[in-house]
Image (cartoon, rainbow, N blue to C red; front, side):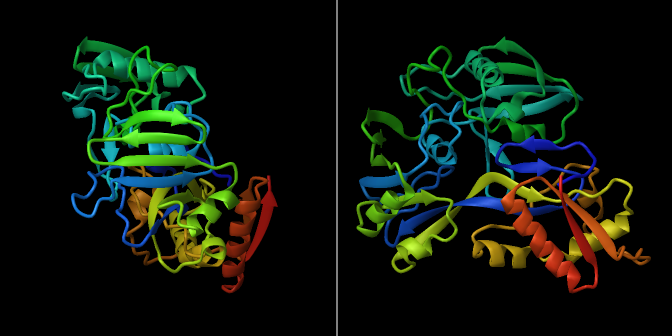
Length: 363
């Protein structure tokens, strides 16, 4: 959707824009009742843990956490690889491989590493972080937006690294959530720092193990095959982004865990539009209704913070006493995307009920 202002993308955490976030896309992991929850940012529960667990996926490309384009594998890789920082469910950051970080200038950060071991017994070093950042920059990695603002890397010592940015970047710390890979093992080994180690890779299966549990990742050619095995109880878990899953596997005897994805649908306004009008338009859009009608309530409204100084950050709580009238006719520009068109149609219907006409333009 078209608008003015600089947009910065922060991995799976948030998109910084000048106005409203409309929808936050999610992945859904369906779990049978009485099976343990696997949370990739917390330790597995100490009770009622099954010693062997099977997980089905249908979008496998590679185990390499830097080059994978699969959201399923991004989720799985968090069991194997740690990142510099981790993002909590309430969108705060906590230490990962980095034990502390500080902003020492407008465009300068110092990062200190914790005593984290690779699964082969060696220590994670500043060289590994430098290698990871440079590799992301040189490849078609999904994490490229996380590091493209980094202009220079200086290794101060084995556990300390200094990053110089091209420009001052709000919330830069949130960008440090990319996985760290070991120097010179990029395409040869799957040595990680996470709670699970790659034990074996064979035809259509990846075996992960730690001291107490074995996880078998079963790779399917089609979603239909995966659903079939799930309903036959050949899988404990499956990962899917199909919000109409109940049509295939029902809803009895399963529970679900929502996983934040990387896709966001958002609106930006014309920069010349008055702030009061922007706020009124924002309040007229019923995002929950759109999620219910289009996605069976399997998407989630984004509520995380935006860039300092942005429209929402400054005005979302403001009560307007002198409201400017909303124009009777508004133009909504979208790219040529079927999903965006469906959302635009929903917005148009909502505004029509308020006697405001929306002209949808495919740009």
